[in-house]
Image (cartoon, rainbow, N blue to C red; front, side, top):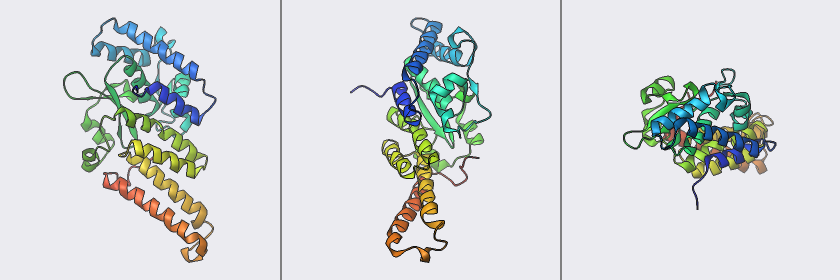
Length: 276
């Protein structure tokens, strides 16, 4: 069985959010950019030249991007509009966030056979490159994919020592976990549509592949909380008003809500890590 292909996975997952995405158009554009990066780097180029070429085709205006370089979307930096996290949207608007920007860089760098992976910090995704010798290098794709020190991430995006030690943050994600991370957009889209049980089911699949994904644990716990609100807190102001035949359901939802937050906290997540 061949290894997971980031582009194929991203297109398939994005089409679960927007079935109208033209997969062929997205694939053609990515392959065009990858070819341009290979040409810029030159035959037999070193990792340094290939990395520079990927940066160039994304962030520098030129024929490789129709003189429309990609940049940061300051209006929606967190991708709170789920559609802004889709690769097709990024390719069209040229404005991305801390999900779409590392994803594009990852896909192109992977196609140039660079050893790259996704990594996460609180409410943030970036790319890690592993050279043939030496330690991995963090690449901050919202800022030209320039190197960023671990200390910089810990200053800008405070996290606990425990979260780093457990691998919840600042770790190169294996390919399977990286693809699972991409699937969080599907989970968020379902939540936005109030399809709470479907969102919970997708979260289960994500956590099976990526068991240290504390943000998905918290999101899933919050969805259980939303079910509690809609099914119980709103219609029944106090627990004693819940009909006897519904109390088992209430206890099960409450248990999952508390358990998921507790699991995330055990891995180093803190309640201060919430989107603005």
